[in-house]
Amino acid sequence: MAATLYKQFQRLTPQEQSYLRSRPYHAFAIQAARDTAYKETQRRFGRNGHNDRSDAFRHCYWSALLARELGFQDALKFTTAHEAFPANPPAEKTMDIHNNRIGLDIGRVKGTDQALSMRCMAALQAGKLKIMVK
Figure 1 (cartoon, rainbow, N blue to C red):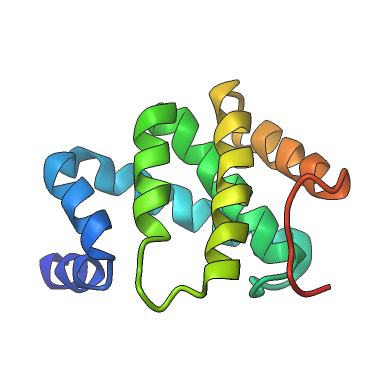
Figure 2: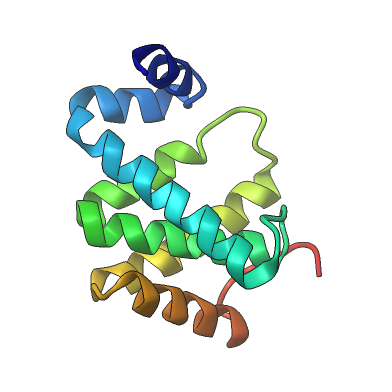
């Protein structure tokens, strides 16, 4: 298990690694939120796409879960660190940061996983989330 965790850590951006070095106790909450967001996106859309509606929803929902679990400021720091890798195309980074921010605001209000999922879906349906591929 330790080897698996180390491999996951090595795949993170340097900024994510720095964040987790200062807050290692957040690692499990971040991983749990990621897993929950992937599963819920799969359930709602039948896939976890790239730059499409499912991607926008997943970013929103993951960020909402993080804001609820870590608090707004720490979730903002981690989601910003998550997007900080050199190969991240500028348009994708802008889209993801926007969708993360909507999710962070949703997660500030708290609520169950289901409530946060419904709020992110409502944001998507209202055109508040950005997508690049229809």
